[in-house]
Length: 179
Image 1 (cartoon, rainbow, N blue to C red):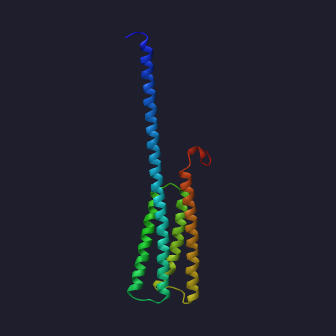
Image 2: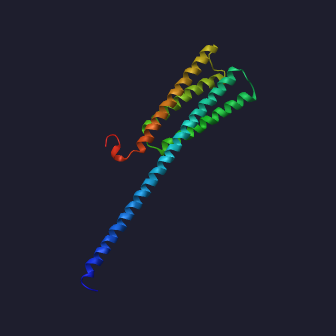
């Protein structure tokens, strides 16, 4: 080997190592981006399921309210209540999943508030189901409608917090508020 080819060989080796290092970094960046996208997709799924379960629980409460308002007795009344209890269990499971798998405190606080309003609505239907209600039909209607409206407002707040959390999660770190 001549002395003149040595610098050329060293340069080629150096260029190859720089290229390999660059490719490794690019692969790491792609894996990081894929992992972040996977986390965001899972977070979005958990949040959408949480909203869906809240809506289903509220709908089941309306079903029970209607069955009780129509004075339907027996199996249909009991089955409607069983469905409502099942919807409550689904919501509780999804709320727990949201708390475990996410760190968005504003979303967690909004979910807690929604749970409190849904439980207040649930108490109205449960009191009525078990005969522990005021005797005036207007007051029980008013109580149910007031709590149902509070549930709708709490659901809207949760949806807004979720939207904010998901949009912040897709921002590059340099665009984040406070950075």
